Image 1 (cartoon, rainbow over the protein chains, first blue to last red):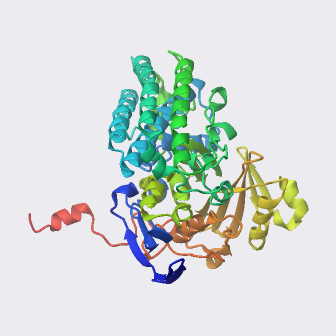
Image 2: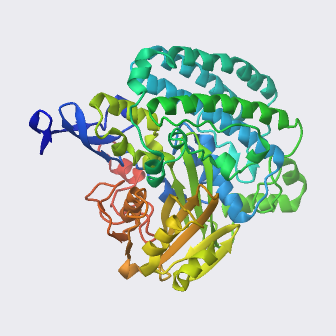
Image 3: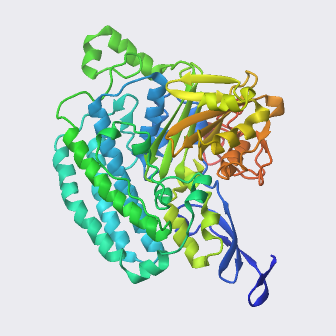
Length: 398
Length: 163
């Protein structure tokens, strides 16, 4: 407790413990708030409540086994986590992925981006008191999860993207399912915008709240929609394209207001851009073609070959018992996850298990800027600011 | 990129590694902060974003710790990795917090999980693990299942008084 000088004289501050079990923290995050009346003087985030040691566990698994762990890091973006890990291992091995598999990957992660933004929008709106948006967003998210289930058999922890390609051929009827979603979704996004964009309560709760200057945002290593709302058009899909993103037509929405409202507008615009990418990817995916690269000893052979070729059977056995050993070296890959730059660093020492796997999780690093966003603001705005960074605590703590 | 750094101070570039299209510049420990500051402020480099910092433990090989800083130049669309090698018995390096404030939590995480210390860091505390945790779990000599002497599930089942 300290004494601060204000316009009305000296007052005493109090320390308030927010969380770890607080509905608006989207997980278990504890924030120590030093308050002067209702104004936040100082904020100290305390994390680690969901630390599961995923990076350590990866060191004890073979390269292929670790894919299932990556799903569980960020439950709103499992496909993106698979993708970044697989891209890093593929880079380490020097593997090329067939174009068809790349387009399938792009389509899946863009659908994932929409579903992640929907969960963000729904929960952010409910934090600020708009109940119905939440119900609408989850209704549409369910449609995306149904598409994932069609492709992989799982709604959330799909492990669909594998080293060298994807796990399964697209199922019968996938085009109709995606087409139905693409037809429905634009009007649904309009519906959310009708509810919020010009809603006076929403505007009062978000405009001018949680401002951060572009210089501060870069200095604090922020990425993703939070950085783009500050006017910096840094998007890995454009700047360092991966998975053939350079063949797709899309814009990178930016704003200059850099407040909660700006970040909301950026994310809504990103949903529309993602729909464009999904449409293009769907047109690029041919009906027939490979979904995995051919790399004996690294990529499991086709089932048919295993029954007719001796070598294929031996490779299959070796891959699933011993694994494969990339040459010693390191690789770092960064993709644009719904929350920002999701990076994966993989180091090999020439053994079948990785020497080190590290995830550069955007939630963790963006959360670092939280004190900057909320210091000097009212306590009610703390909730808006936590929501606007779009953190997933599973990814923060890993 | 490497030449710019070398022309500033030839000693700053101890080794350059090119692997899989990525450039790694190995920097001596004493020059890390100065080299990082140069990377950020030099008009030809402009590495304004410190995107990631992480550590690799190569135990029992010495120097066992390898710190990797991944830098991005948003205006110039470059990526580079700065690397510092540290001995296990003297794992201390200058903090990059004065250069990029974003290094704060990244370095706290490395301190927490590897036990590497950063001199000049404003708030070097554990971040993911409880403050009274013993050891640094991401070191190679720390077992995956931890140090705590917990009986296995089967053992607990056999000892259970219910049966």
